[in-house]
Amino acid sequence: MTDSNAVAEFRRELRDWLAENCPPGVRDGAEPTVETTPWGSSKIPLDSDSRLWLERMAQRGFTVPTWPVKYGGAGLDRDLYPVLIEELKRINARTPLTGRGVNYIGPTILELGTDEQKAKWLPGIARGEGGWAMGYSEPGAGSDLASLSCRAELNGDHYVINGRKVWTSDAMDCDYIFILARTDPDAPKHKGISLILVDMHQPGVQVSPIRLLSGASPFNETVFENAIAPAADVIGGINNGWTAGKRLLQFERSTHAGINTSGSQGGRTQDSELPRQLAPYLSNQPALRRALTAHEMAFAAQRLTQKRVIEETAANAPGFASSAVKLSNALITQAGDELRIATLGTNGIGWSGDFQPEELTATRTWLKQKSLTIAGGTMEVQKNIIAKRVLGLPD
Image (tube, rainbow, N blue to C red):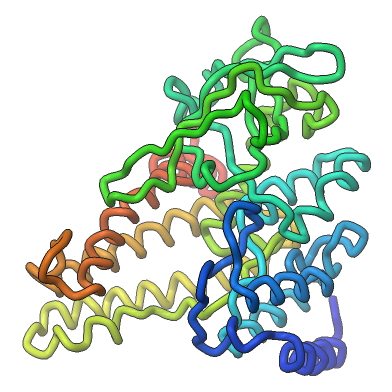
C-alpha cells in the first residue's frame, strides 16, 4: 500500500510531466489527423503528435504502467495506477497505447512466459512495435474452442502450421498473431493444444476480410499454409495451450470490460455522450426522456462497478468477475444504441442519401455494436462463466 503522501507527490510530478510532454494534438479535445488510438500496427500511420506521444509515454513506461521497468513498464503499484488514469482523463489525453499486444498477449507472456520470451517480446510490445491479432476461433470451433483443428507440427526447431481461423479482428493491419493450434492430435481435445506466436509477414499467412452487416470489415479469415513459427515461441509450455489460452481470455475480457490494469486503460473520457447527442430530439418525447434517464443511471452504475473491480483487482491478475463487467458493459452499450435509434426515428435508419453525418454514423454504430455480445466471448459463454465461477451455481 502506497501512503497518501507518496500518492500526492506522484500526482504532482505526473501533472508537471504531462504539462510538459503531452502534445497539444492529443489532448483537450483535439482531433487526430490520421489515427485516433495507436495500437502498435506498423501498417497504420500516426500523425506527428500521436507518434511523439507514444514515444514519450513508452520512454516513461506509461504504455504498460504496471509492467516491470526492465520490460518497458513503469512498475506502478495498484494505488498509483488509478492516479495515472485520472490525470490522463483530466486533460482528455488520448490513450498512448492499447490493443491485443499490451492488453492480451503481453500480460500472458509476463505471467506464463520464460525469461527468454519476456526479454524477446515484452519491450517491443511496450514500445508499440507491431500490432497483434488473435487466432482462436475456427469455422468448426467457436464456443466449443477445444474442437479446433489448426495443426502445428514440429520440424526441427520450428513448427509448421496449417489451418484456418475466423473472426481474427484487425488481422489485415497486424504484424503478429497468437494462435491456439493442435500440437498433439492423438491427445484428448482439451490436451495437445499449444499457444504459439506467429509472424504474419510471411507467405504462409493469408488474410481475407469478412464483410459485416454494418458494411465495415474489422473481422477476417486467416489461413495458414505451411506457415513457420519458432518452437521457442510457444507460451506456457508445449501442449498446455488450453490453460494458457484461457488465462489470456481473462485478460481479453477484462479489457472489454475496461478493468485490465495490465496494459493501457487511459485515454479520453468515457462519460456518456447520449444526453448531449439526443437533446435536440427529446423536447416532445417524455417516454424517451424517461428511458434516457434510466439508461444514464445504468451507465453510471456500470462505471462505478468498473471502478470498484479495478480497485479490488491486483495488477496483472484479472479474475472471473471480468466476465460480469464485460457482459454488462456490452448490454448497456447496445441499449444505448437502441435508444439513440428510437429517438432519431426514421432519421436513425438511413444508410446513404439525404441524412446528416451523425445520423448515418448512428445507423452503422447500432449495427456494428451488435457484435459486442459475440466478440471477446459470446453472451451465452459469459453467462455460463458468471453462473459457475462468480455465483458458484452447480453445473
